[in-house]
Amino acid sequence: MSRTQRTGHGDTRKRLLEATEWLFIESGYEAMSLRHITARASANLAAVNYHFGSKEALMQEVLAQRLDRLNRERLQLLSACEQEQPAALDAAAVLAMLFIPAFRLSHGDASGPAFMRLLGRVYSDPSPFIRSYLEAHYRPISGRFFEAFSRALPALPRRELGLRLHFALKALSGMLAGEDMQALIASVSQGQEINDTELLARLVSLLVPILTAPFGTPEQIDVIERVLKFDSTSARTSAETPVRPEHDPSQRSTALEWLKEGRLAS
Image 1 (cartoon, helix red, strand yellow):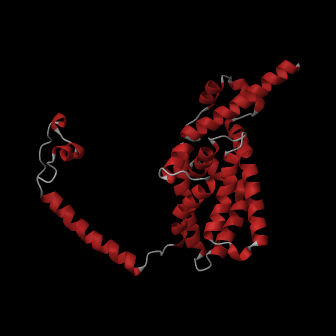
Image 2: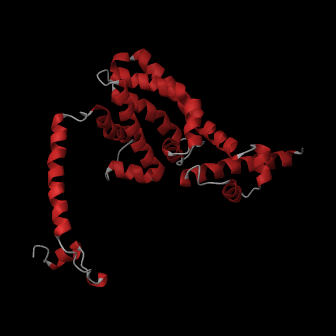
């Protein structure tokens, strides 16, 4: 094979990986097909078979390229912190160990701005293939970090800790998968000039209460019961109220228009 041919094959392989990554970010694993991938990569099915053999193998290569280094560096950071400051590892610190390597890699040339969206999609995608891949390949890191959270929150039963971590990480993953990173930064920064350290601190501060807030206390239950009573009364009143005919949408005024006209109070 000539040098030109080898270069061409390398370019095709790279295009297939990039196309797969972007389609996965945009629509998830189950929604993308080899036809979508080859069309986006300007390649053909024979190229997929030559370089990877299947859609599954192609996706596995994407995940390995993006996640292997990230999780290796997460484990290294956790080990270093456990060795140097074991008493200082509270829930916020352990969360930071998950985020800091990801943010650093997202700024690198090899990963680019789509890296965080890819992570969000990976951890929120419901595909059995993605779930089984993560379970098979990243169980050691999941176990290490679960034990770190367990030591940081010793009063939490392990089953409850698992539930809380599931909610916290799913919430963040859904946000990352659905938003451009710059939009997320703008939202978290609230119009202020902040650096990565403060950005991470704010993200962590949003998630820590999910891990530490009281869980179904009598006071919380009392609040819900009082609201349920109001809901029952409201629903009964709504059912007894006749439905009024809809007005012409073109004649509707918005609350902002009412305010401008000074007639909201009336």
